[in-house]
Image (cartoon, rainbow, N blue to C red; front, side, top):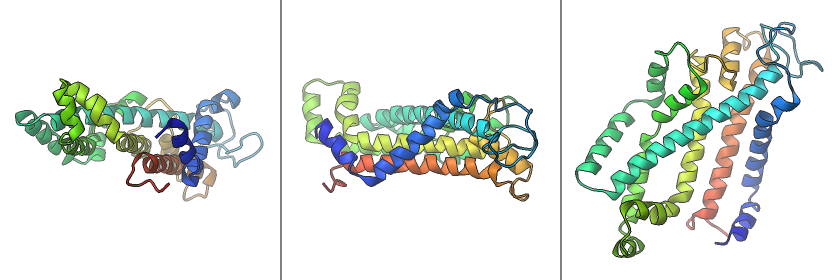
Length: 281
C-alpha cells in the first residue's frame, strides 16, 4: 500500500482523528504549556486551597502551589516516563523474543525459561519492591523500573510471531540468499509484524503513564519532579476527594484517561490499516 493511500485511509477513520486530536492537545499542553504559562509549579506563593479563578485557572493546593502549572509540567513528565518505559520494554522484549524465536535448542529454552520466570512475578509488585529501596527516585529510574519489569509478555508474543513467520516461503528464500539471522529478522520478519509492535509500544506508553501514577500514589514516584501521579498523590494525602476539592484531582485524572484512550484509538486505527485481516476498505 502506498504512503498516500495509507494516510488517506487513516484520516478517513473517525476513531483515529479523535484520538489524534486529543493526544496532540495533551502533547501541546506538555510541550508548549510551560512556555506560555510560566508560573513555577513548585512555588508556595499562592493562596492555599483556592478554587479556580482568573489568576489560578485550576486553583491551588494546600501548599499554595498553582495547579495549572503543576498539570502542565506533570503532563510532560508523565509522557516522558511513558515513552522511556515503552522504549525499554519494547527493546528488551524485541531482543529476547527475536533471539528466542529465530534460534532453537538451548538458547530458545534458556530465554523462554527466563521470560517465564519474570512473567510469573507481577510487574507492578516488582516495581514497587525495587522502588522502595531508593530514597531518591529520578524520572529515569521510575521509567526504567516500569520498563524492565514489563517486557516478558511482549517477548513471548514476538517469539511466537517469529516462529510462525520463519516457516514462510519468503524466509526460506532469504535464507537461500545467505541472509544472516539478524538481517532476516530486521528486513523480513519485523516489517511483517510492524502493526503489532506499534500496538505494543503504545500499550507500554500507557503502562508507563499508569504505572507512574500508581507508584506515585503509593509514595514511590519521582522524588523531585511534578507528574500527574504526584498531583494525585498530594490530593489523596490531603483528602481532596473527601473535602470536595475537585479542581485538585479531576484534571490530572481526566488527563491520564485522555492519554490512554487517545493512544489506544490511534493504535487500533493504524492496526486496521496495516493488518489486511482487519482492513475493510
